[in-house]
Image (cartoon, rainbow, N blue to C red; front, side, top):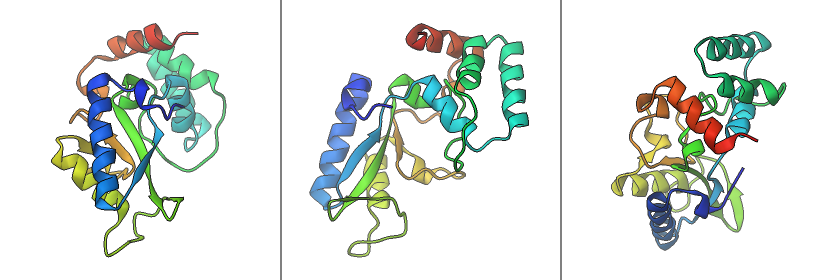
Length: 179
């Protein structure tokens, strides 16, 4: 997984640099944690909180619907363990498109992951999300379900499935990330 802002679309990279500068100036610095994520890495994150039956059903569904590469991305990474961190299968996160970034709050020189901790009555993630929103970016912390405070994305649409059909996503991911 990349932390390099250069892996983002140039237009989005410029906005993220401005966002990070504004967060720094406000006294709540943020640092990139994830930028571009391959569909294989996305498959690992998606699998880590799913049962074997759920994984098998999704692989079968994707294969049946002509998204063989996306099915391969989920199947090839093998079993994963961990807490639920994403609803997005490979190709369905803007991270695979270079249009999303996850950042952590830097507090007293350390990564702070709490969305409850405050400094001067303000949480760094709330500050970050508010600034991002004011810049026209989409902040995952303001989503109505599955709030993702570290996540900022370029587009308003929750995922690429709102812009492209499954087969287009499959082809784009295969073209960009096939070994």
